[in-house]
Image (cartoon, rainbow, N blue to C red; front, side):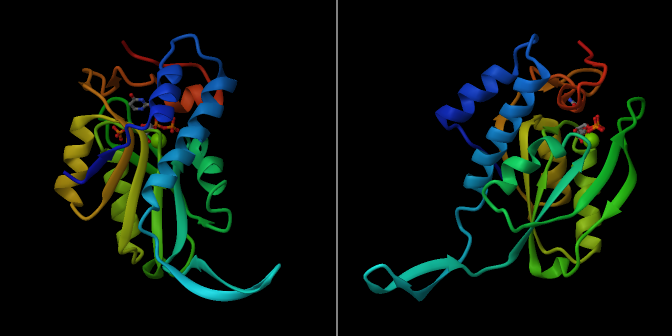
Length: 213
Ligand SMILES: O=P(O)(O)OC[C@H]1O[C@H](OP(=O)(O)OP(=O)(O)O)[C@H](O)[C@@H]1O
Ligand SMILES: O=c1cc[nH]c(=O)[nH]1
Ligand SMILES: [Mg+2]
């Protein structure tokens, strides 16, 4: 399976805090960005670098700089915005491509309301960000859109993933590597991840929670 569960102690600690039922909007937001940064660190480990020389304080010195594909970060609205600053804190010059999706809570299929991608997608590494990979419908719809626009190298960063969503992404897009802080147990009958985080969008934006037990 193309999924990497990053079991770093800092991630496990922060995710544990995020699972508390009484967490405040402020704390949930802060932790989502922090875990997003840690996932970004892992997901970019193999980025290409090249040597070049600069004038350092004691003369010429060989240093490295990123040389591979430029990055576009792809937050899936709304909840993906809750990870954006965390990713940009490590890749500050990345361009941002926005996909607006909302899951129809009856059919659990994703409805698209926005597709605003940067240019030259075929020359970029696309890092999709969304806190929750549940049925996988939103992620597959996003990958479909990115590939239609020419993207060839795509990675997905999610805070929590359900086995069902991982299987769907793997079956449809086996080339896409998923990075997650946790592979959780399962989906409940309403398509919510158990134990999960509840409704991540509502927790990040402070809107009324529609958590379904
Ligand atoms: O894997 P899936 O079954 O597609 O579910 C996951 C999607 O559901 C949530 O978004 P939601 O549709 O609730 O929208 P929001 O981000 O605007 O709250 C979440 O942020 C994912 O995008
Ligand atoms: O568990 C889930 C599933 C979909 N969307 C969420 O925000 N949480
Ligand atoms: Mg969404």
